[in-house]
Amino acid sequence: MKIYKSKKYLIYLLTLLFLSSIFFGVSVYLDTGGKLGGGKIFVLAFLSFFILFNLITTFLRKVTVESDKLTIKTLFTNKTVFLEDIQDIGVIRLKGRYSVLIYFDDGFAMLPSTISGFKEIVDTIKNSCKSEVADKLDELNEKTLRKQSALGISFLLFANIFLISLGIYNLFV
Image (cartoon, rainbow, N blue to C red; front, side, top):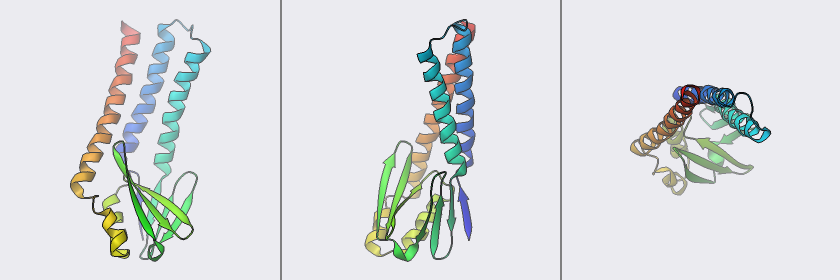
């Protein structure tokens, strides 16, 4: 049995993004002299809570691989997929990441590329499935995954720099 969790750099960048959003919110509050309308407070609070929610769900995501099954645990679900029961696979490309939809008798499960060891998990699935199902995972090669990971990191770094820069601007200009 092997347990995989979300990539550490993703946790660090999301934590920094949450702190950056708090810093930005405080800087806006101080810049206006505490005279923020309800709408602005709502937007700033929503931004911070949205980032915090993503951080918590990312932190709690876990995939357990055993010889005959995968267990994908998230904040809201805990799905076990027996490798022999996989009927189809779908690959979805999202901003800065891939997700693999695994269809089986009782429904489906989603495996995000933000899990450490994602390529190993995909290889385990490929080796356990029928060839027509496994062939759908061929686009997830090392180069493609590295490129998508770099895109995701770049987006999070940009978002952090953006919020910190605007916070500094609000405080000192």
